[in-house]
Amino acid sequence: MNAKKLATGLILLISFFIILFLIFMPIYGEGRNGLAFSDDFFNSLAKGSSNYMDDMRKLAQPLVGTPFGVEIKMASPREAEKTEILYSQAGAQVEVAGQVLKINGDLGKVLLKSVDDAEAMFHNQGEKVQAQYNYAGQEVLKNWWASFNKVDAALKHQKKFKEAKVVSEVQKRALEPGYNFYGIIPKSVGENAAMLVFMLVFYVIYTLWYGYGIFELCEGFGMGHEKAAHKEEV
Image: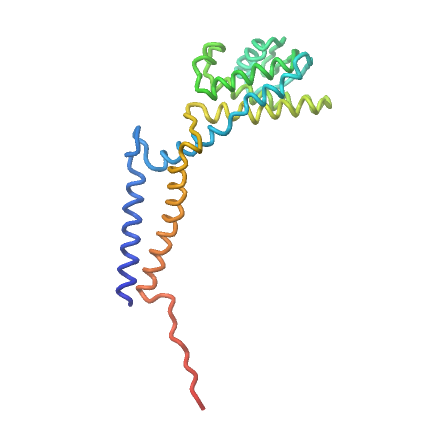
């Protein structure tokens, strides 16, 4: 037994769990605990560097005037009806039969319309999108995303790989950020560098804190030590 190491280990572990208790307390603004606060903080930083809407608009613009015709099957008749509204407002001609949509239109205009909706949601303007389609903005982006999955496959089947690639890019870099970052306030890394460094350093120290507490506790109980073997001289 090593009383000094045992005391050090107990102090480290007790203080570790006290801080852990405080992390889970809802004392970090708006009733959030420490984990929710850090999650929101890093999401805000990520959002500040994830706005590719202008790039996607530039990517889609050359396809204005490019006709496309596809037949896609949605997950349900209700989803098909809601998706039909999106393409119709983008200027396409759409026929609905149960879960199946037959779409003919201008691919560039459809893509630009989806980017406009994604950008509005990215900037937390859900009411604007909902007013346009008469259902929730996040569901609008979800239907755009699901239909683009199928449009992408249909265009590839038609060997229109260039057009399919643009559809996939808009899906990943416009619709997904618009959906995932809706409701989050963006923050720049430069303006929040001090908090970022503090949280990263704290994470490393806090992880080592627990490890050293266990190590010192084991040392205090004498675990891990073996008596040195002495050779007898002949």
